[in-house]
Image 1 (cartoon, helix red, strand yellow):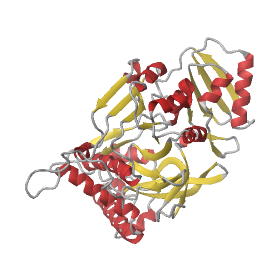
Image 2: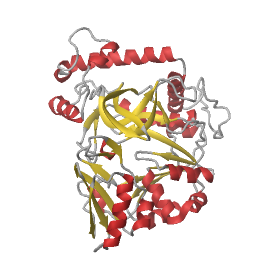
Image 3: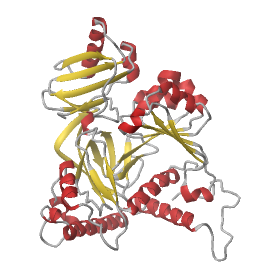
Length: 457
């Protein structure tokens, strides 16, 4: 359990009312954070008993409320042990249930539900319904990780996110949202830094200008934004910004960037999550690349009927059961990612731990032989081969990798051959490489502007 007494407090941290210690909302948040830590990092038998009850409740709820799920679940009395008989759930299965039945907790007397819909840029779009408790849990679980990792709340925090809608993409100016604190009600108790959220509109110079307006301790972003910062200003820029911890999200994290940041004293921690589920796992603070499952939110399985290779290891499909998915049940869901599942972490954490996580599945390249391998080439390495404004790789057929080099009217034969050699070195000589220059890449079907997608993986 973490120690709260060493954390800097506000002068008016405690409440003045009789029989009251602190603001009720802050007290609730702190109690829930302690409960999360106790369940996830405490006694394994107690945790698994709690999870098994959650699983039983979820299966019975789905059976009672949904004809779709009654056709998928065993007909006999349900308990947590029946999970192994539930078929793997695909995105198409989620879509079918949502289209047929809507939310399973909607109706008179129930809390309002909201919905989450992916952009579809990584495959079939998925829409799920969420209850208010889902949003609160996601927020409080993310905040709990700062306590679990003993990270101060007093640091200023900057998050960089992409523009993920066409409406935002049409607005070329940088969008910035600023708040005085980022810890919610707990900012009344503990000293809390400011927060800036930057929506990157693909104007790199504007991004650098905004970042250099003030120093900050935490940078929250995907790897591709670090690529931009290092390409524009090197690690010297990161030092000038005062970054202490890079909290990595979403994409493949380049080990070379981690190494460069470690050399100047910047820690790197990665989170694994999904919009339709929330937190799935958090990286171990001691053993990089090992992710402790968010036991209070999900149960993770691996399916080895479909495998991929990564770092010399054979990875299985990750199947996720969302313990609190009462509005849209997510049970043994094929999220499209691959990894290895272990029963403990090398650090001693006594709970399921994922290593060699690679996803999404659409970031894998399917070879003509049928095997799946991750595809990744650093944009800095690409820029050493030829100049460009933007670039996109696609695999639309099993034997061909298509490359669009943006911001170019034409491309020389020498540049084509150099780029072809680089791609083959990163993949395999069995692929045809189709390279063409375009003035502007049409991202209308891929608002996240993903570097690589495959429709055959």
